[in-house]
Length: 509
Image 1 (cartoon, rainbow, N blue to C red):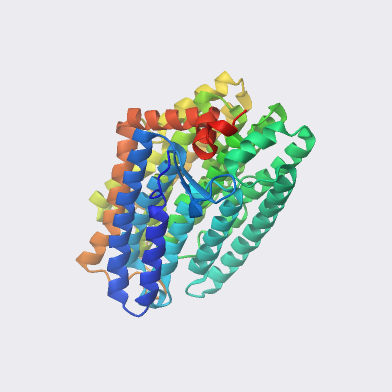
Image 2 (spheres, rainbow, N blue to C red):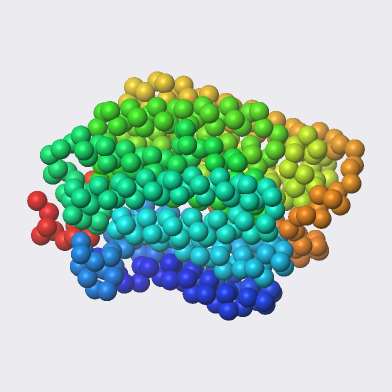
């Protein structure tokens, strides 16, 4: 069904960013507009999701050029869900940014660049054209690089260089894959590619082309062995930036992998084996990296890597239950990881450090706040019936159905290490007595938090409450999420409705 308004979440972020540029020196106005604009985009995202749920797959042909000749945007259940999750995380982080981002960063365009980043994410989820997916990835890379370097500290620059170098490499590999794919089929439209790639007789060349996309998107998703840029860069920016990075940036790579390898390159047995091996190694290296870290952000960065392995395994197992589990975990992980980086920022402001060995006494001093944080930490671990518990059931079931016992073992080990790591974090940061006080002025003097009045405290805690509430909904109303991921999985495994919505039934064989 054609709907020319499905692109509104992207257009809205663009206009918000432009207006924020015009308000370059008006600090308070930027903060208010960012929050109000994010709330408006969230309303648009909810409307889009409901419309897709009620009416099915929606399309928009740019310039009224019919696919596959023109630029097309497509909203199916998967893409509309990702836009909704982006809007939820974006709204929460915009509130947190209002209280945490310094005046200097605001004057140098933080809020405008932040909304351009959200625009790039939403555009990547909604595009139906593979070259435009590359373009949206470049928007994301440029915006995120600016956010990483804004402030100009040595650690930030070092992390940003690693981040940018690896993402430029990923973009080059991605673009090479696009060039080969265009040479094979003469098309860039994803639905059209689905039909034409299936008809290519040279399967060896098709598999080689697919490998370019595995590597390119693997770098962006932080899959083994291409993950080292993530823990080297995510600990350097302000907490608000780290939160949106931790929640969403690797997930856009995961989205692209699932879109490509369910729509265009349906995995054969050898490709499934590659995905399983990558998933297992990603889980193990991420878990082992997390268990030795004492810096909270570095620890969380390695947990991102570990849990990316859970999601990637859905492409290796490639059955209904496993992909449902992967999609459920993706939804849970975006919300929880965003919240955990916000929590790390609040803990840093209270304790003056990200090093767990220099922290303690959180529960004694902040019992209500600590219990709120416990909800998020236990959701990550997967304590039943919280949000991290349900997708693992599906992942285990999918592993047994595919007889992939190595993956099941890695999933068990990753879950146990996640439990150990979070239990240690809770014991050290929350339960143990606070260490002897040290001079916090040197630490806090370089931080981005504004002076903490009661109003500012609320603005830092409200987004944590919002995301914790979403996590609780995912856990306690899991039957609703199951309906969503079941529909996403059905559309992935049967791509005919997607192709028909984009190209029309007359072009199908």
